[in-house]
Image 1 (cartoon, one colour):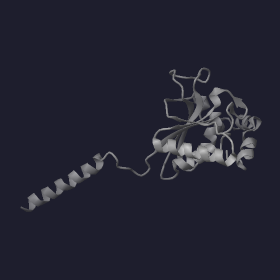
Image 2 (cartoon, rainbow, N blue to C red):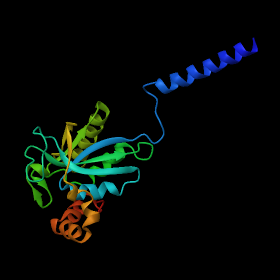
Image 3 (cartoon, helix red, strand yellow):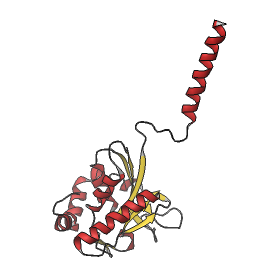
Image 4 (tube, rainbow, N blue to C red):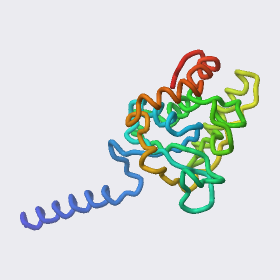
Amino acid sequence: MIARCICAALMAAFLAAFMIAATPHATHAGESKTAIFAGGCFWCVEDAFDKVDGVSETVSGYAGGTTPDPTYGSHKGYVEALKVTYDPSKVTYAQLLDHFWRNIDPFDASGQFCDKGPAYRTVVFTSNDDERSLAEKTKQEISDRFKKDVVTEVRPTTTFYAAEEYHQDYHRKNPVSYKYYKWNCGRDKRLAEIWGDTSS
């Protein structure tokens, strides 16, 4: 009788553990999420997001196009973008979005800073309704604040292709040439004019 009770107790414990493990909506500490932002030159956007606590990985790449396997020399229809992997227990999507806005010129329809052309358009790529609603809401708030049209697009996330290896962590691998490029491009100066500080 005692052995049977022990066996039943063990079986109940096993089933409980199995049900918890099998629950599809269970969340785990340290679970990561991703977000994709296009803010002009992906070197600069990667540099900006690498400074955010809670961001574990950044990958420069191409997003928004339809042809397969884009490259730096051939990515028509794509924008330079950054895939951000982050821990939502340390930094929220709303905070990432705010950081994105403060590192771009949301009023320039021709590109970003010294980089002009369709590949340098600004885009927030969203993966669900909550992200889309928040992106649209903050976009409107910026438009209302500055009394200007915000040209940054809010679009559904599409296939993301990582850029060539030499583009990854460019600001770390080539700090001198990167700083010269960034200064010469006028990025910090323009960001200070818009936002009142150099957030990038």
